Length: 411
Image (cartoon, rainbow, N blue to C red; front, side, top):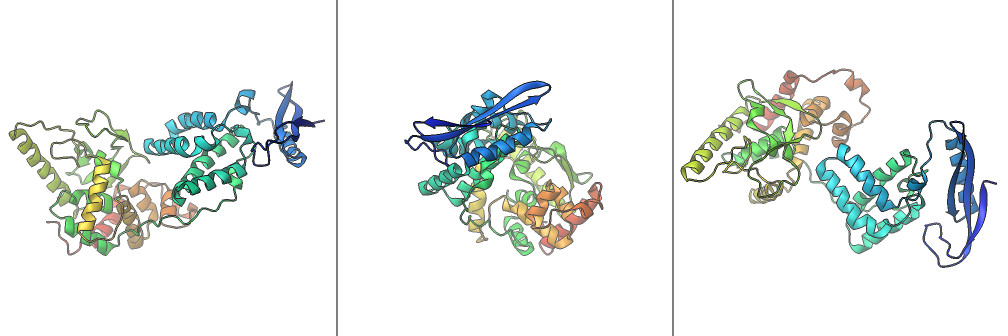
């Protein structure tokens, strides 16, 4: 018989928690053949016969599928902590940005492993996850942070299911409904972007705001842009690298940049934004001359945006200073990254061309569709374009840049 009863002194309940009471559990044992060899699949400790029968039926269907490979004994004995640690190293190195990987790592260490790290992976249940989220909420973690913990678990456990380490993903069957998250600031309108650029004119912020708010570059892409990738003569620049994640604050010389998140892209320098690039180039030449004349070292990293002595600007410092700057200007609160959202929203509203908007921002079709709250069924749109050429990007960016800067001559 594939299912057998067994008496235990300390039975677990349906949530996988030890009750301290004796009882009966049910073990599943299935004999099958694979590649001409007789094999046995076992999973023990189901609290009810109904659960054991359900698992038996599911596994019989899978084990008769030639493409299915059951987990090894070692994999079945993995704890949540052992699996997720190994998964993050294997999956994260190739598929996650360094900042995302670090975020996953911190959440595992602080919010997952202390609670369910020692639970066997194949015994993890939706009830255990619901209990985890309750404890985190009671501890004072915000709804947004608790939902992020759920995201980390959901992604990693879905991979465990695909690897056949577990038969189903418990994160998909939770009962928890996450509370309302903090509202993302509204992106700046065209009028607000015009006001912001007027306020920063003639300051070190102007090209930073142009790159973030008119081109939609990410902060790391702005801080990693180098003059060697800017072609003023032909009116284009290439987004091919970004500032490395967690660059030490004491860094003076960058030995190697990191690749950009979503592939390289070339963007046109519109006539109306060209003066911003030219002024920045002239400003840096003056800063270099003053630094050297003062007998100090100038670190020529070829960066478009850098400190006065050429050293790389830090993300945290730029983000903090941006917050203070818009407060002084009495502008509505946004995060620096929301300049990118503003560019996406305004380009789409002006042109209706979200495909080109996605190519300008370095987004996938699905990504730009989600950001703009549009349908992600884009087959009809995709069929219209094989590639967005530079001249099409120029038309779209010209439309947006002229709308923002009309009546606000950067010269």
